[in-house]
Length: 458
Ligand code: GLU
Ligand code: MG
Image (tube, rainbow, N blue to C red; front, side, top):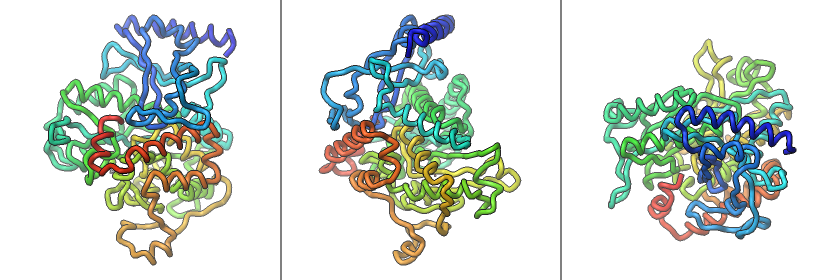
């Protein structure tokens, strides 16, 4: 971050600001996701963008220990009112927000005032993991399936905005202009949408975004969620991405698909292993499978996550893998015969939107890359719903129920061989402090109370 870098940033920020003004944009929202999974923001008027690009925008490090209810906990080296960090917009990702005309948005990297990378920056963690993949000669693409529910808060609880059935065309007719506006808004933001459909729960929808490089995929999650939220509001509805919207019903997942290539060849197709897995592809997946209980601490990190992550709801509540098995936490997707070289990918299902998407992509990559060239193999696959198998069969297959509480997931994370080290001391400490504080916060609350307290936070 020398003078030359800052001058270059200022120039780029100025050029971007000129173009934004021409397009009638007044403000630029600069956001990131904290350890509670909440998107926090600072905004600048367009005229201030060049300065923000060169010098960042101030924000306290205490947000590293903010909880979902905005209470503040403390870690070993973070907490309290002192200190400042700088949020630097990534100008390569600057987008005009189609759902909020007059606004643009960019994700940020967080640095200290002396120009050092902030050890708590979740986006930097994702960047580091992506760089390790690149160094290993692996080209990674990641795509999220984003689920949400549209409705309104009524005195009696939550009321869905449409009445049609699961996957029902009726819902798309009820909300036809809304669905169309979503597609046009995302297209205007250059988000490539693969699919949009009504999901299982009342008022639930899902959108799959095209795969991108890991950090870009996480950035895209922020953009898609804010666009969905904004377009929903323009239609008089509220969107929620909370893992559980109504206690006891199917929740919102945010499944992560990943494809890996080496020298242009798909590591999940054309190999000698089961369903064409290559040795490296299988080993990567074995690494993810091995770390899944620990990964749950990051992928399904909140108290309401565990109301969602239950058997027989397609959430992926068991540590097992299976081809096209929607109850397996790790699903191998081969695609249609004839195009598997293009399409074969793996899906991590035990993930929801209370996860920080940067921590999620970084953690999954870390777990897989640690095993990439280790020659690890996957165990026997599970073909149906593991919940239907008796305990002896589950034990024979080595299948375990994923952690059922925040605390048990955190102890698996603590024991994991690679994840705490990859997060680094500061980020690991701040993240686990938040997760423990939230577990304590909700310890005596009923599922209904947990859901009511978190429904509109994600
Ligand atoms: N809503 C389910 C979940 O909580 C996922 C349904 C699906 O497979 O898309 O993860
Ligand atoms: Mg779905």
